[in-house]
Length: 396
Ligand code: NDP
Ligand code: MG
Image (cartoon, rainbow, N blue to C red; front, side, top):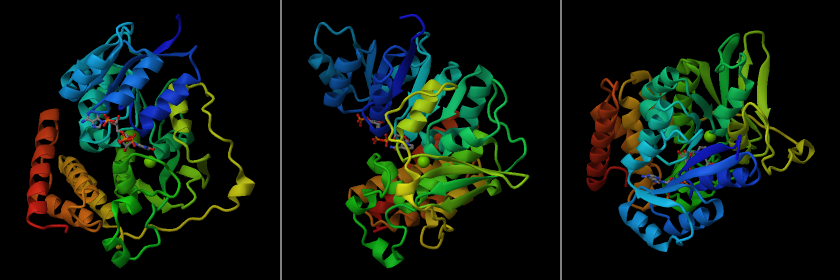
């Protein structure tokens, strides 16, 4: 057992969670699974508990926790706990070395923050927690001495291309700007008229990546790139005008760093999240990830184009939120979460997503967002407004 790093996987039943456990299973000598957490997927969690035998399984949903407890075979020593607060308390456990934060949405902030405050190595997939509470999260990382390793493929690429001083976080030494690549999503070549009638299944059919439904819709609206722009600003202490979005449909270059002397460093690979996940788990070593080697001859070409903010207004809305500062980013994120769910439930149209976010931002603007309580309150108010606006027909 000596030397094994104990991992907590938050959002273990999701796309990133499953890929994380896939990488961990390839290195049983290096990693133990101490905690798994999800919301309602009891059956998937039971199977993961049987395979990885964690000390704790947390279901945020109480009923799901009860069902899991009843289904858990007696010979398994896994204790089942319930609720968000219990989860935030447990991630700080001394036994845990590494926390993979892969819950989807603002719901991931309290546990990611708890991991940062406890000084864990925090592998951050949950971009919404940075968008909502970037200042708090980065401050917690600095104060506790936690390691924050970005798992979002673009930010992981940027991390890999930034100058890193021995034992330090990436610095901006000699860096001119960051080139954040975007696939352009399934609607890259669609007209606004075509997008008006887009269905949830069409929005979730991403050309290169297989992901959960929320981030798939975000990729289709380009809000994913907007959230990632904000994420990059917090992670690397960048002003928004030093982050340039470049559409690159093949998703082979995962992002780039442009230096003062004209050099541009790119990180490339097949679009498979196991690469950034293995990078985070192994850092500073490189681990086998089960990812097929990149075949550049088969790829044949790499294309680039500018994003079209008139067809994809979400990118502009994210930019405006970061400029407004304070709680505006939390408001933008919450409005987007409600809008995406309403679109998936076929209550609003695809182009209703930016319309709804813009209306909510107009109403709430931004206030000071210094505490978790202020951010949660802004998040809740934005959600209430978004729901009320949907009822009034905004976005349909
Ligand atoms: P999924 O929808 O596939 O999975 C979400 C996970 O979060 C599930 O385990 C789900 O549990 C859990 N969950 C949902 N709501 C809650 C809640 N309220 N409390 C606790 N757990 C909850 O999402 P992805 O794996 O695609 O994405 C996860 C995060 O990673 C997102 O923030 C996304 O933006 C980010 N990301 C994902 C990428 C990808 O390739 N998928 C790439 C880059 C970033 P249950 O199954 O029980 O509902
Ligand atoms: Mg990404």
